[in-house]
Length: 236
Image (tube, rainbow, N blue to C red; front, side):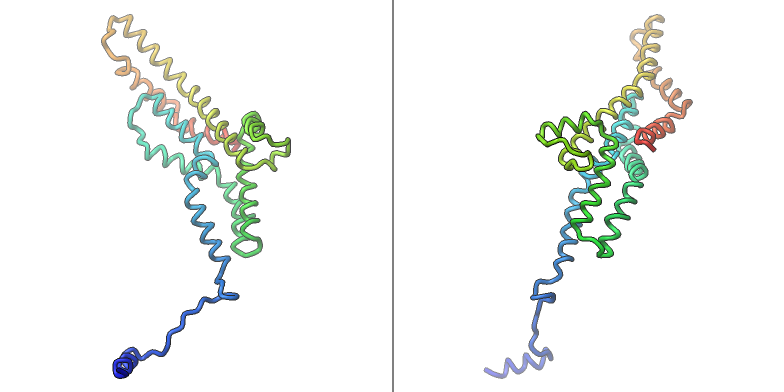
């Protein structure tokens, strides 16, 4: 009965194997685990952060209104509109990202501040951007519904600032969309009036209005005007 055990020992050629957990008192590197948990959490929240806490909402809505005003069904494609919105968001939010990297991310990676302090500093920069763009009336709406006492804007919790910022972005985007629709509606009215006066009531107005809209949009360099207006609407 001892032979099999001896043979197994000779075949493996290894002594007893012991597995131990390093770290103080066998607890492991807790800080690394916290970092991994933080990264996973940020990755899961990244779509919401990108859509709701940045300028992406206003940009993508305005670009979608352009396609609707021109009466173009699938051009530009959704991928192009979203892609352009993402790159414009990166351009507009670049100063905020730089501040977050300087004050929160870089010191945290250098172990100069804790993860809690890094989150607070990063949240402060995001809060400052949202408060700058949001209307005070919209923020005050959620402050009153949350039954919070009057305080400084920079001390408001994100649960109040974020919905107020979203409502303000939707309002601004719809205002800009209305201004985009006006010239194209006038073209539709003129074309419809001309066709009726010529007795061509069976002819769809879009047959003539669509080329005129595209011509007008190209002549006035519409994409440059829209992009410039969007960027300037954020105070840049």
